[in-house]
Image (tube, rainbow, N blue to C red; front, side, top):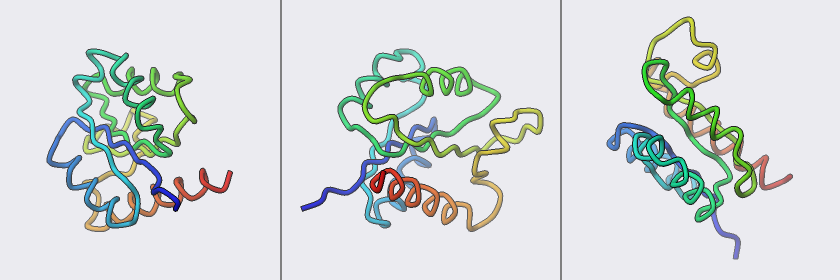
Length: 130
């Protein structure tokens, strides 16, 4: 029996993270949520989270107004597990931040969550085939 791919959702807003987790699980994946603040305060907790769940995909909310950009740099440099694919989201407007250009803007339209679920499903499938 094949287990569903694990998706870790790192977001500062717990309600948003739970909502995204429900949508991702409805697509047949297993979602685990984590708050950004505690992980930034204790990066070893992020490493332990990745080691415990070995996610195939990490949904990460990035904002130029907090510690999410430097922490993303830290996550990209980690060597834990199978190096999950990062799918970036944002709820912050800032035209000067290059990372936000590659992030799915959850405020952009009613279909933003559908776009996110499609991106996560695609990333999980690509990793499974690799």
